[in-house]
Length: 162
Image (cartoon, rainbow, N blue to C red; front, side):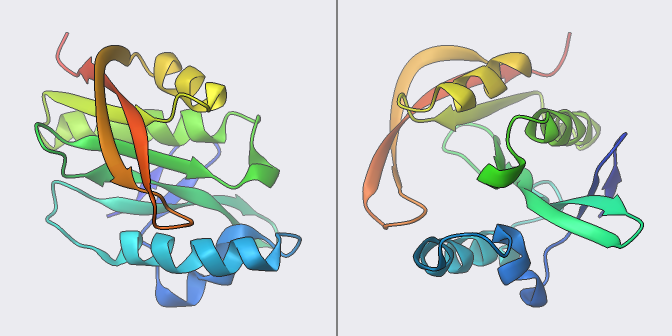
């Protein structure tokens, strides 16, 4: 499954995408901690109702990998996941990818989605608010992407049917 938005192309991730996800100037230790978990996340094929994508920016010299976006199974409903590498942050890529995944989620029959973020990440909170998600007051524990330790995430929810 592929998605084309105004600037972005969302496509399945492949094993050879590993290092491209974090750019050449990324801290090597951060790359070592992050590449494997993100590749694992992309490799999980739960069902066609929970697609996962590599977010790329097509250009004359090929497509630059910016991050990941997609849906994953949550305890009550599907969860929106989006992450853009720090060097590409602040340019609206996460919001554009998130909107594309929301449109696909509606098409796939999802009626509502959750999106989670840590309290310490105001940019993530703004991202989910831009997409119409509202805090539920619920918290969930998840394994952290980089270190494997548990992190607390605030749950935000959004109905997809008007």
